[in-house]
Length: 264
Image 1: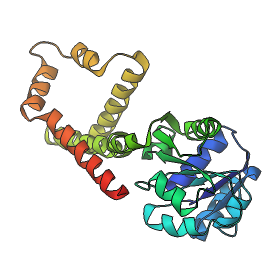
Image 2 (image 1 turned 120 degrees about the horizontal axis):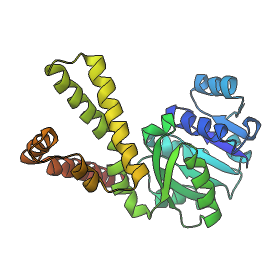
Image 3 (image 1 turned 30 degrees about the horizontal axis):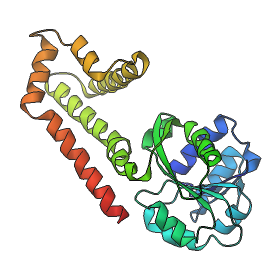
């Protein structure tokens, strides 16, 4: 595979580092470009990949291209993809619909749209992708392999990428907010901030790993750690009284609605 990367920011770099670490491609098979030349120079120097002179050169020299451009710069980037045709373009731009990408390039390339999330930066991402109208199952397998290099990946219909955005795309921020609140409460109760942060972060990580490794439902795991009239019972009663489930639901619905608006 000859891999191209357009956009060398944090997510582009994270994907590339994961792909190279899994030896899916070798550095000499990778061509990168970004209008921010320092980001390109850094990847060339540290990862051994090759730099392109522009977006068009990336497409000419690659058969699969990761489009890691922010939504506001995406239309201009698409306009520069002249010359070569029938490449696999994998877009991680939030809110940019497949139909809009295909229309902009006159269906000259196959499109796959991905919703990744920021834990990909540490190899713990959760990504979902949807196939464009001309993308093949072989393209889907390539996408699984590339995104799988930085975490979990699954395929969904494009209309489900809006709820995916509300769940895993925006989800890390909900967890960060939860950790912030737990740390603030622990400090108020007497712990120093570093100890509170370490305990909170490891607690969240451990709880998630318990769900993944045991295969048990969160409901069962919650019940297993909740003794009648114990400390956890008291905490959960407080959460219920404050409509915890409704707060999470409303937050995700707001993210879902905004995702639909951005793609309109």
